[in-house]
Length: 503
Image 1: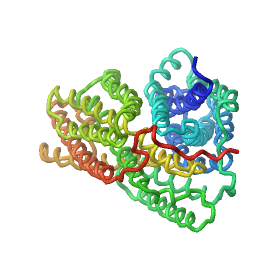
Image 2: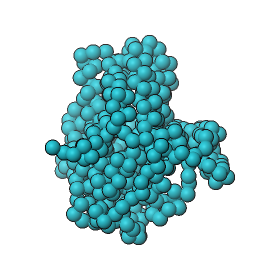
Image 3: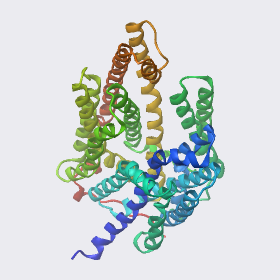
Image 4: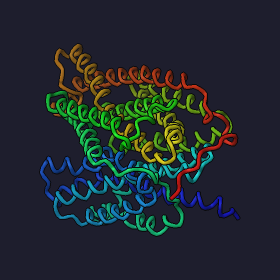
């Protein structure tokens, strides 16, 4: 029988992972529930957009602030408070009678989710002070999150098939109640006892800056390049500059930007941002390739994506296991090479049915690479932060991922669109504004020849995106190659870490 000292951290990790599973499900499940919600609540187009997007906006916009709040008031306390808030908001969302109620409750759930995730990841380092075990625990945590993302459409579909759309929100209530009951005895309290009050002006600047930038990126994805999203992006960047200047001027800033000056941290943050950019951008092309270019049904397309998701979940645990036998730096470098091979596959997609196998194989390689590297990259940043600011460090990494994914949809989407239009113009003499319009027009006209031209132009754009991914991964590999060997790269059993500050 395991000693209590060994069992306690495992139970605590399981408790921390359960809310992450629900938060992940909540990110994706609304896409399944939205049609029935729209039929019952009759939202306007704008309200429908906000119902879908508000949760992600609030997660991305408040995560840095909530990470700092957890460092100040205590991460266990913040998890308890936000678990209660998440459960109450979920119950209200389940029985919402107007679109405004859904938008409001989803916004509250987003803020609560933004608080729970960085606080949980920061506590993992306290529960597993050995770096090798900490990386493995981070892999297990990410496995729960990825599993939630993978099963959300299935779970949501089954629940809506047998109950009403509000049932998908009730999933979070029992899990959060379990957290409220078990957390006081299983989770340690970790905080910065000397921290000052939260600077509300900094929090407002951070929220406004990130929301404006993310909103601009989403507008660019949905409507293309125009003045309104560019104005929002410039305004968001300007507020971000004011936020950074304010952090440098404050004696006790909301976010300790000196973390980025610690050895290797800035490079890891760039790696996280660039890999998220590529994964977010290429996911758009893979979805259109399967359903529009290859003509697969949504179900068959989902089955084609399933191997990548399974491999990513396996890799999130396999990577930390390999780190016990070889230097972790080699595991990360090898993982990034795997990811690069995935983008090479996208860059050489052949015509015909063999292209489908190449795209599926590229997706498997890319997700295997990021899945095995991600726990190390996350742990690399969090472990470099002072123990009392680990929550802020965790929120940094998550925000880099959020903005990276949104940026990838714009950057890679723009590259693919430019190449698509040139190819289509060369083949037909005219060009649609995007491949979405091209596929729609070919279907409306029932013109097989036009459809062939559109498919060929889209695949050419996809290849260009794959080539861009290879070039960006070259930069990522250079960032890791130049990384100086540090104690975290030695065998886990030879490393000691600082103890967290307890209250």
